[in-house]
Length: 336
Image 1 (tube, rainbow, N blue to C red):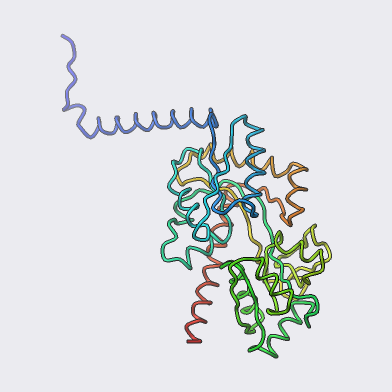
Image 2 (cartoon, helix red, strand yellow; image 1 turned 90 degrees about the vertical axis):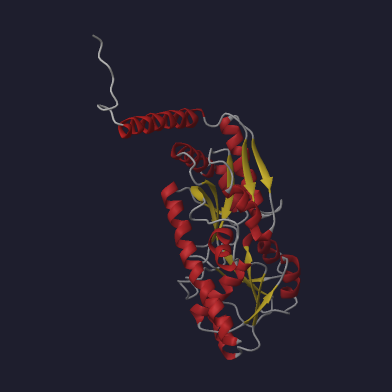
């Protein structure tokens, strides 16, 4: 007599466990096959800003080199709006298959979550870190005949004239850099917001505001032409584009390290093998002499690091700038 399978010997919970195990094996097999063949079609790289800016320039360098290395088109998709929140939220909602990547940067990932009630994404939960691309300090600049030439002199003047000193910025990130300096120097200055760098630079060159915290790409041409005077870099080391400009650390403010960064992230849940493959290839690109020299001309320092290191950087800056935002909000309430 042939043996008969009995549900008494193999209870329902056993069959459920077998079914789940088989599903897991199937998923792992599909994931492995997907990772091994990646990429086999076009990759979309979302830039949460308009064409022509620093994030766009960085994205196009990476896209061109990835396309050349892998033989697949990498399309740069500019999605500006809401201080980068629009494009970043689109990246967060994409399929986690490695074919939609997003340019991440300090302001969107470490500042927006604290100044917008609902930016449309959670940088720590909705994304997985892929690769840090470049770091870039900001530049403290003034008009050519201002009365200060260093951060120490700026702080002294601000302490002596707290009601008359002003600082300008064109973004929430640079506003917070200014507030960080006020916290570190224990001084007060009046904040003057600008919608665009062009207007801010014109007013600064005329002496209508005292100091500005600017990105290197926007400030370098005006510094080299003599229209603006560099005071210091918000970093711990100098940059090749402006080798004579001292760092904040050299100027007596070692904690005034406020470098920004651009990197690449993928939606949470993207297979780890794909993430590691991307990290490896992007790091190779960042080590290419032509890429390093091209980015250095705009004041960028290439920064090839591991996935884990980039994830730690995102979390560190999220916590750090969150504290500055909260302190700034508390200061505003005190003044009301």
